[in-house]
Length: 264
Image (cartoon, rainbow, N blue to C red; front, side):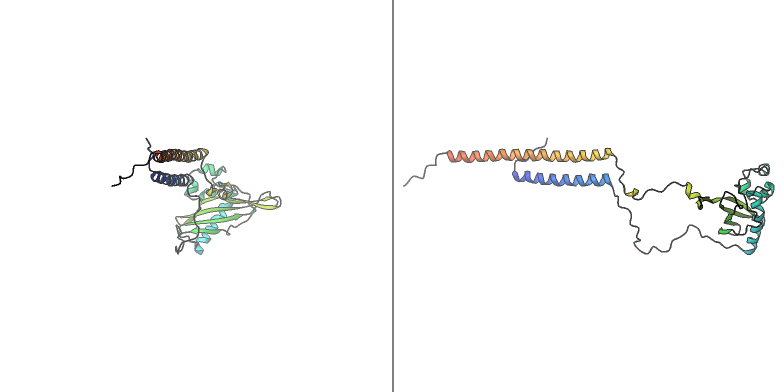
């Protein structure tokens, strides 16, 4: 059971210490509940050196390899993308394209390559190197639509692989679609199907629920109620002590004076 000191000085010290503890508890509860909402400082604190890439990218392709890739694409694009000759397209495809399908499927037009109406171009040498090694080349290529077609130009990305001295198409997929929209051009690419980014300031918004706030305020209220009860008890006991002291003084004043010393 809590015992209030009889000494007024000790009671004052008790109130001061209790107030300090209550304030510290309030600060601790608020700090733990709300957490740190300050975003990280984007400014570098020192010289961090040049950025390091996960892998070095090379775009060097020899003239001989580029000429061989041109010949493969000149035959593969009309045969596969234009759906002109499935068997020829499969003979120019690498293992990544042919592993999941049969020759019969390619001949029937069931290819793992998207179909696109070509404009009759006879060569497809305008491809751009994205990454290259001695046996593999990643590239991008834009294909144009026929005149008066209700479709835009498409951008493809592909991969070439060198097998047995031959360059084969090991991947060919759509990267962006430039479809006309009301007299303008609208480009559709992989980013259009990605998840939306978080709104500005979302990282600094508190995620506390109503239950957390109720528990915080309940804790604060309990601390202040306890301190108020201690203060009331201290005040009442101090007032009673003062009354007793005044009563003792009045009793002393009402007593008859002590007799003086007898004269010799």
